[in-house]
Length: 165
Image 1 (tube, rainbow, N blue to C red):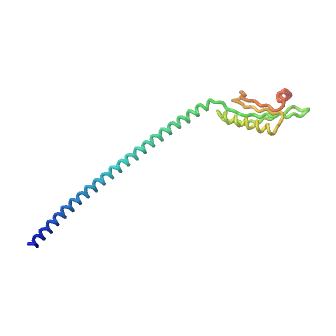
Image 2: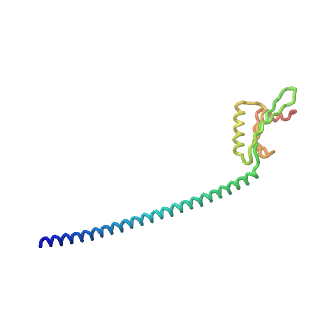
Image 3: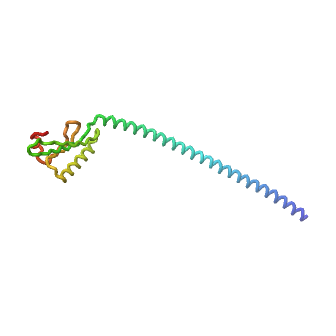
């Protein structure tokens, strides 16, 4: 009887072990499915986020391109109506008994480049002050005839009234 009881217990143990292992396997399968579904959803959201980011960057880049193009056209249109600037250095050479000779050195700047013209004008004045050529006139000209600034070294007005060749 003892043997029958032991064999019955072994059968019961095997059945219980098989059921338990089946339930554990089922739970592992369910957990694995949940993890796979979760990873799939996360991957899908990452893909959607990267698509949205790419679309956003593309739209922003497009509008920046359009804005920069319009701004460039606007600047070009405004610059068209601005005057040109130039710096003229006139040097007068006086030799007794001969007519006064005038030498003009002109440096032209583009339309609307007043800052570059002023900077160059100030550099010429500084350099000319260091070298000290007499009878020199330095002009900052707007357009063709309008003088913005004028600097004279020496008696330029008196030399101009003489017979200039």
